[in-house]
Every structure is written in C-alpha cells, then in structure tokens.
Image 1: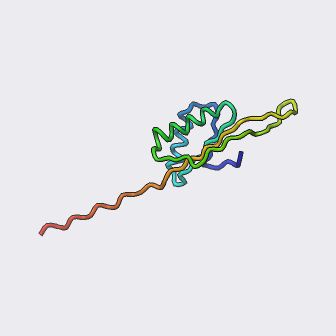
Image 2: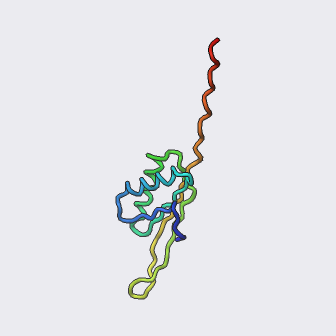
Image 3: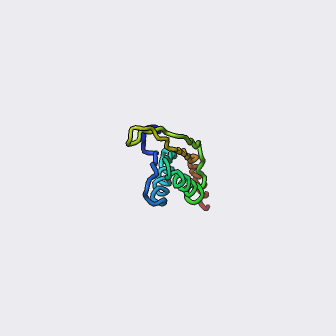
Length: 108
C-alpha cells in the first residue's frame, strides 16, 4: 500500500462508526477525498464504512476506484505469507453555493 496522508483512513479494531465519522469529516473537508484502506479480516468492515458514508452521511459521494489485491509479507518464521487488501477511494463533488437572492426594490 502507498504512503499515508491526511485523507487516508486505515481500518482496524475500533467500532465502525468511529471510521464513518472520520470518513465523513474527511469528505466534507476542502479536499473532498477519502481513501479507506484495510487488510485481512478488516476488509468487510472497510466496505461497511464506505457504504454507510455513501448511503447515510455524504449522499453525493462517489467511488473513484476500488483496488483489491494481495501483499506478500514476511512472517515470524521467515516465510512468506499473502495478505489480502482493499483500497477504496471516495470523492465528493464540489458543493455549489446558491446564488444570493435578489434584493427587492425599495417602495416608492
């Protein structure tokens, strides 16, 4: 997996709603991008986090890409072990600010 930045959310053992809160705040920031990453058993939690964000909190969020694969890691015995991973990149379209209401003409 690539380097970590402020828009990257690593899924672990915390409750799902903590990740949803961070993802929602990240998407609603000026950057409007959140990258959710997980390995192994946390993959299903990462998918749940992305779906909750999209369906409940940031309704206009889009999946820019979903990358799945296997990382080969060195295990404790010196052997190699494959670990599945997922990377979900979510974006939010720019927020359109409404035009100001016209000012009524003063009465005569």
